[in-house]
Length: 468
Image (cartoon, rainbow, N blue to C red; front, side):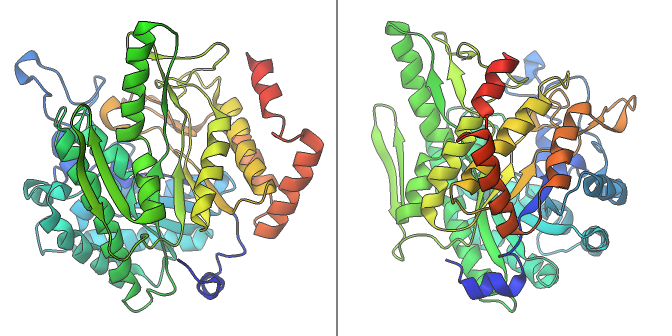
């Protein structure tokens, strides 16, 4: 766990970071170098039926081309009032073939960091955001424990190259989401369906890789000054309705929460124990770290909503829920509850992802206002939240849903008809970012004052009821 001296030494202890996040691949796909670039052009799962792995008529291409237009995009980030920018290092670009490091790709990331420094944006970097080289995938990826050292070596190379420029590091983004989508529902590479054992093995190996990477980086020059965390997806499923069919939906919701939610990772964070269960069979995988709880300097909270299942196992909602374009409603209370639960780890927390898919841009302001107030409520109540990152800067390639889901603060279309236009709903975030103080203690004072004026929940429930 981090020492106070470490935090004071890197200047993060006194700041509340305000920013946006991207996955570099989503905004600048590589030319067939990574698992996702290969997967995005495949037919799944029945090639003869012509079912594509991704939705929509447009393939990924270069997406919105952050790789070449990073200066422009980082300036747009700064214009929002941001003080930080979360992005991912692309392993496939850096090490396209095993043992060969691409100097031009390394320089491009230096160029990106140069621009961030010029604009005063604090980097928050993720080492693995769902993508890795095809050669690593072909070796079995994280399904095989023997591949963990390959990831650690990559992480060490990146830390050796960039540690003087970056204070905040995350080893992985959303281990549960990655293992669920890749091995249970086939919506991510390698595209397995109902490979429940493979999903559990993959999740365990990613968690082992986090610990191994943390220890390796901390042992390197500059390692004690760095803050190394883990970013997790916090999602739950529940069932609507009643009766026998509701019981089936409830049973499915419980298993989806277990496989995709964060109970497994939460238990591991508290104990160092990993347990993977299967329907009927029961416990299939158990493992306990002999050193106990995993090391982690900060916790990244990715929270969007909860999912409600109908009796026929389709996405639904409760009365008065405001639905997004995805399969879930706006649910600010869930973010507050997530922060409260995560605070039990006793380490600083960052809201590393939260955002809304809203093609009409008629709910984005409500989402931003209610979710940011939920975060401020947590701050006012004494929880150690250190930053808020909206997802995402730009409309981009949203993994298996392609270009159909519009999460961006800036509108962009793959056909070139719209290019980097600030959406009306984004002004809600700009007001928060440009009004609230950057100093953490002042932010805490502001949050407490707002709670006194607006009420215990910052007026969120009343706001939601008015919208409905």
